[in-house]
Amino acid sequence: MKLVIAIVQDLDADAVVEAITEAGYRVTRVATTGGFFRQGNTTLFCGVQDDQVPHLINLLRSTCKRRTRMMPIAPHSAEHPMTVGAYVEVTVGGATVFVLDVKHFEQI
Ligand code: 2BA
Image (cartoon, rainbow, N blue to C red):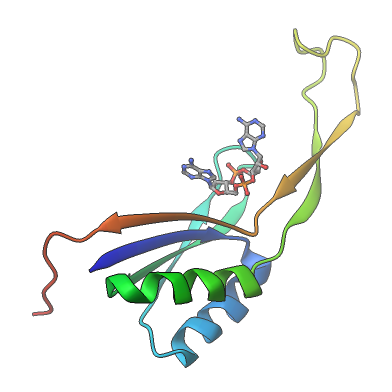
C-alpha cells in the first residue's frame, strides 16, 4: 500500500477531490499554506494499493493546472537593491506529489 500526498492549488482542489472520489478512491483534504507564497493551498492524502498509484497520478495530471503568478520582489533586498514595486513571474503547480510506502494500515 502507498500513501500519496499531493499539494495542489486551491483553484483545482474541488475538481481533484471529485475526480478522486468518483474513481472510487478515498481522500482526506487538508487546508495548508505554502512556505514560499505564504498563501493557502490544499494537501490531499490518499491511501491506495500499489497498482493504483499510476491511475491516481493521471487523475492529478488531468485535473491540476500549471499557472503563473506574479510575486513581489522584496524592496531593497541585497539581491535586488533597486526593485521597489517590482514583480517576478513564478509558475505554480499542477501538483507536488509524494508517494510513500505504508508500513501498516488499519481502521479501528
Ligand atoms: P509555495 O511554497 O507557496 O511555493 C509556490 C511556488 O513558488 C512553487 O510552486 C514554486 O514555483 C515557487 N517556489 C517555491 N519555493 C521557491 C524557491 N525557494 N525559489 C524559487 N521559487 C520557489 P510549486 O513548486 O508548484 O509548489 C507548490 C506548493 O507545493 C508550494 O507552495 C509548497 O506548499 C508545496 N511544495 C512544493 N515543493 C515542496 C517540497 N519539496 N516539500 C514540501 N512542499 C512542497
